[in-house]
Amino acid sequence: MARKPSQLEFAVIGLGRFGRSVALNLIERGHTVLGIDRDPNIVQQLADRMTQVVALDSTNEDALRAVDILSFDTVVVAIGSQFEANLMTTVALKQLGVKRVVCKALNERQQYILTRVGADMVVLPEHEAGARLAWQLSEPHLLEHLNLGHGFSVAEVKVPAPLVGQTLMQSGLRRRYGINVLAVKQSDNKMLVTPPPDYVFRRDDRMLIIGSDANISTFCDLSS
Ligand code: ATP
Image (cartoon, rainbow, N blue to C red; front, side, top):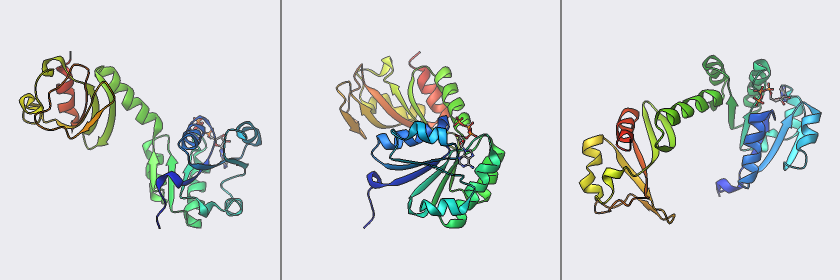
């Protein structure tokens, strides 16, 4: 029987700021995490905050085999500044047969190379943080933003004042702004998923919307 996501096991290789944050957040969500770093001082520092943490050089296939790396559902390679070590680790993990390898890259060229050698997912944390900050700065009414790629996003916004008291149907959001409302979060933390057409927007509602980036920006201007 398939295991629930709550029972997944992860290994995180490279416990710098990024790797440490991924590992500790996974632990906070109830997952089992094996932390790996070649620096014994880092391993010692994290020993009482992580499920298991070991010092080894991840470019060494035998060392990875010795910690039974194949038993982990997902292995995150969070080595940043030493790209060669990141690349060699990724190749070793795929060679050993790890099902899902997620790597951190510092730029698009590294992302391309890591994908070519078999990484299943490559994240560019600095690009992503930069893009998020740019959205927050240019759209101050946006509470949350999830970039779906290809020019589309999901966003959380406070209901713009002109819509308060109108029904979803009267607001004509799809027709006028090309925006679809996925859910409404009410101030008492009640969540209405796919609200009905006769739903009346309240002053403190937050809307979860989906649409093109351009349409979301135009819609956000309603709040200004
Ligand atoms: P940060 O996440 O802090 O921005 P960074 O991107 O600068 O880190 P590095 O400092 O290169 O990344 O690496 C992060 C961690 O990976 C370091 O703690 C380092 O000791 C560890 N590391 C580097 N190479 C290896 C390796 N071959 N095996 C295991 N750990 C490694």
